[in-house]
Length: 521
Image (spheres, rainbow, N blue to C red):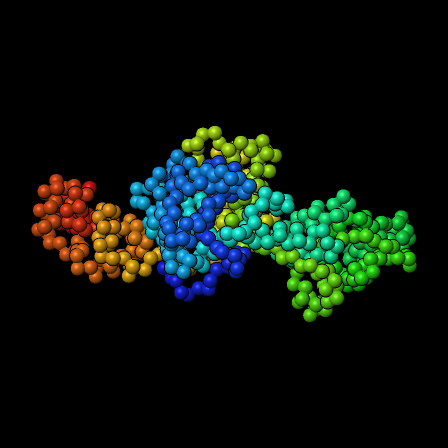
């Protein structure tokens, strides 16, 4: 994460909202992304108290995170996390502030350590990762308070608001006979939705036939779909049933429908209008009883303008349109999907035990830094790409106590980092009072880097505050005689000198050496 990202609050466009509801009440939430016990990934705590103006504490012992369908929650309970809580405080206009106890659990926010952070509503909508103690990762984001969290997942892994809307729409249309067009980027799980529609329809006992039109040879596409009479074309030594008749009484899923040749488009339109197909070489129509579900990642409207797709066919296919969200728009689902695929891969290798170590002090199998990188990746190939990455990670790490990232995967993950929302900011220097500044310097033993992190401002801003303060001096303001006298009175103990002179430790050490007083440590 760049320093510009942390400091600039006005020059970039707002991040994608990732499926936020415009009408449902929204509340900040913490969702477990990585935990030494992988079974806990996906547990959530909704910070409703912030909406009432109250603060929320996060530590080893509180609050209680719950899973979908479970009434009893559990604290994080990692022995490496402190009992001293982090504090979430409400901020104006729906933002919040995170304050970190200097003696408590270390926190890395979006890849950068810090002591105090302000989060605007835009960054909560996009989501930001918090690494706790280098072992546990939570996603700070917003959820709709009335969002459905059903144990019936329809075979789709995830609990994001965007995926919840897909499930709702599947249930609404599944029992109807209207054709459904599923749209979305490649790898988003369009066939999974088609299967869910079939399984929850009156046709569930019938066949489900899946056909990728992009893989059919152009000259054979019509016979593959609608069947063919024996001798209808060279090589047709016997009659062919075709996919439409094979799917009789069930569901036919046509993937990559935008790839259909023109003659197939005409025939598809006829089937949708009449319910009849003409096998190649036959002049007698065959009645079909098929529920059609089509899918595409192609811009069909642009293809229509180019004359490559028939507008009437689009209108017929889209009796009901269902849009699949991209994986980058459902970030809270990435960890659940990752662990789902990881479990499948580990079970095939006989190493599923790695996800549930018996030793509570063991290092997490999924390192916290890697979990953060997975959530910060754009995933242009969506769920399909994620599964491939999981497989490569698991195979490359066979026999290793933790996941290892090889060179090729390092390059892949490094090339697709998502745009970072500038709405995540440190505090404005003007918000730091003189008293708070002095207290922070003393608590951090005049270490300027630590003080800046504790106050939630940049070091450059801290330098400006120190220079403008009438009550704080720098090493250059201290005379050589005072430094020399303090050096001898403190027997060369640099920490004792810092406490007495109240100046920067590093600058004082450099000055002591310049004065030839000997090594001060």
